[in-house]
Image 1 (tube, rainbow over the protein chains, first blue to last red):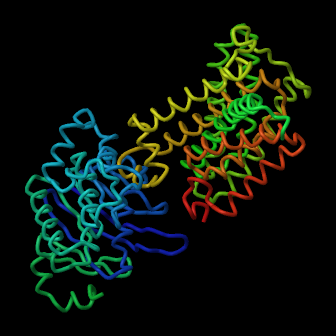
Image 2 (image 1 turned 180 degrees about the horizontal axis):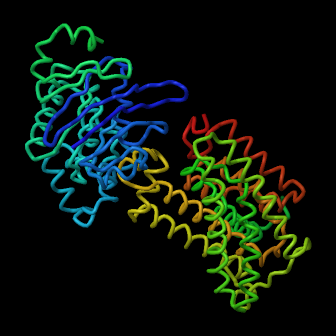
Image 3 (image 1 turned 60 degrees about the horizontal axis):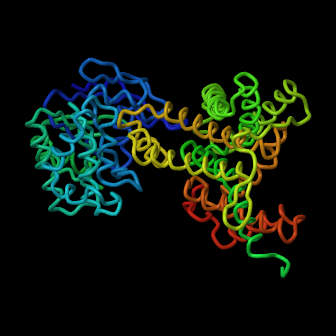
Length: 234
Length: 294
C-alpha cells in the first residue's frame, strides 16, 4: 500500500531524514517508534508533502506522491492525523468534520458520512455545535481522527494520537484502530507509547537519527527489551 | 457647541455612516486578504482608484451606472487576481515584509499607468440621475446617493457574511485563514483559495472606489490618502477581523464627520489620535488576535 524508498528530508541545511525505507502492506498496522527527534514526525510529514525539501520515492498503491502538492494526497486515499491534532480554532465540531469531506467525492453524501462518524464517535455527536477547541484533549483527538476518516481513506497516518490523553481513552482509541484495520484501512502509526502501540501493530520500524535502524514483527520487538531500551527510552 | 442643533448632529451622523461605509468596504477587503494570506496589501488604495476609473470606462461603454456598478468591481478583481498569480504568490512564506514592499511598488505602478492613460488631472464622475437629489430622513434632507452607498455596503457585507458562514467555500476560507496546512492535508488546493480571496478583496476595493467616485470624482491619487485611513480602520478593528473592520470603519467615519462639525482642520489628526488611543489600550485592536504579527 505505502512504499517509502530512500527518503531524505531537509529543514534548511539540516539533513533530517537520511534515506528512510519502509513499507506498509494493505490491511496492516505498522508502528514507527523511536526517541524524540529521531525523525518520525518528519517521515509522516514528508509522506504528506508538507516538507518543502525532500528526495527519494514515496508511493501509495503504486502512485508516486513525492513532489506532488500536499492536497493531492486525499485523492490518493491518504488520511493524516497530525501531531497535536490541529483542530481548526473558531470552527464547530461539525465544521471541522465537514472540512475533511469538502475535497472528497463523498461530499455529496455529507449527511450520511457525518451520521456514520457520529455512530463511531458518540461523544463527538453530543458536541457537534460546540466550538471544537473548547473540548478536552481526548475529544479533540477523536475529532482529528474522525476528520481524517470521514473521507474514507485507504491509508491513514497517525502522529502520536495518544499524546496528552487519558489512559482510558487511549485504550478506546487503540480498539478503534483495530476495528479500522478489520474494516480494511491500512495504518501507519507513530507512537511514544511503544508497548501499547506494539500491542495492536503487525510490524514495527525503529528510527534513530533520521534512519531506520531496526525492523521486526511487533511481538518480536515487544519482547526485545534491549532494542527498546536502546532506541525508545525517553 | 451651542450652535449645533440635534438635527444637524443627526445629519452629520448619517454623513459619518456614509463615509464610514467606504472605509468599511476597503478595510473589509484588506482584512480578508491579511487574515487569509498574511499580505499587508499596500496596493489596496490603488485598486480602490482603479474601481473609479474602470467605472468611468464602463460608463463610457455602456452609458449605464448599474452596469458600471457590476463591471468595475469585476475588473478590479480580475486585475487583483492577475497580480496575485504572477507577483504576490512568489513571496508567500517569506515573511510579511516581502509582499508589503511588492504591493507598495505595485501601487505606484498602477497609479502611474492610470496617469498615463487618463491624465494627471482628476475626472468628474456624475451622480446617476436616479440617485441624484436628497430625501427627507426625518431629521432633515440627506443626499440620496449617500444613502445608496450605505445600502450597497450593507448588502455587500450581508452577502459576504453569507458567503463566508454558509457556503463550503466560506468554510474553506475561514479554516484556511487559521491553519492553511490542515486545509491542504484535507485535499484542498489552498493556492486557489488565496487567488479567490485576493480577487474578492480587490474587487470590494474596486466597488468602494466606484461608490466614492460620484462623491469626489476620480483621480489617480484618490487611493493614497484613503489607504492610510483604511489602515487605521484595519488596525483599530484588529488585523484580519471582518467584524473589527465594520465596527472601526463606522467609528472612524463618525469621528471624521463629528470632527468636521466642530473643527474641520482637525479631521486627519482625529483619525490618528483615535488609532493611538485604541492601540494604547488594546494593541491588537478591537477584535484582533494578540500576537498575530509576531
